[in-house]
Length: 340
Image 1 (cartoon, rainbow, N blue to C red):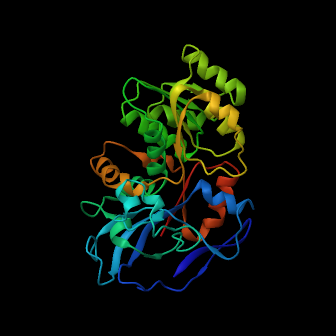
Image 2 (cartoon, one colour; image 1 turned 90 degrees about the vertical axis):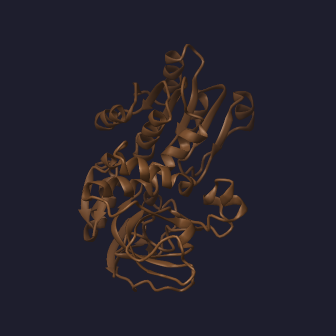
C-alpha cells in the first residue's frame, strides 16, 4: 500500500509500505477513505520532534475490511471514524471519560500512521465508532474532522466550561481553534471571541459562531479581551496553539475563577508558578479524549447540524502529501485533506 513517511525534518515521501495484517484478536483493518495533515504533524516537519522514517498521520475514516475474532462493536463493511489515540474504552481511566489516558494508550501518529491506504487499528471496539450508515460524499470531510481537530476543539471548550451565559475566548485560529469556536457555539456560549489576524480565518470563525474578532496578540491581546469583558477577562478560554506567547496570553485572558482549556501541543512552554497561583483559575487540558465525544459528534454531523469540514481549505491526492505539508508550514493552508 502507499503511505506517507517522514525521513527527517522537511523530507516527506509517499512510498510503498507493507499492507497491515491482523496481529491481535482485538484488531481491525480499515481501508481508508480520506486522511489529512494535522498542525501537530508540523512539529516533526520543523524538527521540533524527531523524525526518522516515521509513518505519518493520525486522523482517519474508512471502511472496515477485516476484524479480529474478539471484535464485536464494528463489522466488516462498517464506515468508521477513529480517534487519534488507541483506547480500550473499558479501563478505569476510559470509563471516567479520559480515553486519551487509557492504560493501553497508543498514539496513532508515528506508530500506525494513517496517511496511507490502510491501517491496522488495535483495540478496535474501544477506538472506532461506526456511522449510522454509509455517508454521502459531502459528509466525509466533516467526519474526518471529528477524528481529531473537531474532537480536540470540543474538548478544549468543554474543559473551559463553555456554556450558556459565558464569554469564551479562543486563542489560536488554526483548525483546532476554529473547531473550539464551533464547539462553544454548540455548547450555548453567549459571546465568543476569536483571536485571529488572518482575514480568511476570521471569516470562518464568524461562520462557526464568533461574535467578536481580536487581532492583537500578547499583552495587547489580553488588554483587548479585558476591554471587551468589563475589565474582568473571559469566563472560558481555549488555548489552541501551544506556544509560550499563546499560553501566557490565554492565562492572562481568563478571569479569576474562570476556566482555561489547553489543547495546543506545548513544547518549551514555561509557566511561572507564582503567576499561575495569583491568576486563580481552573486549568484542564492535554491530549483530547476524542473517543468520549465521537458518538455525539458523528450524530451532529450526520444530522447536518454542524459542518466542521469547512476547515479543510486544500484538497490533494495522497501522492502530493509533501506539497500539503509545505502549504501548511507556509500558512498557505489551514488544513489539508488527502484523498485516496
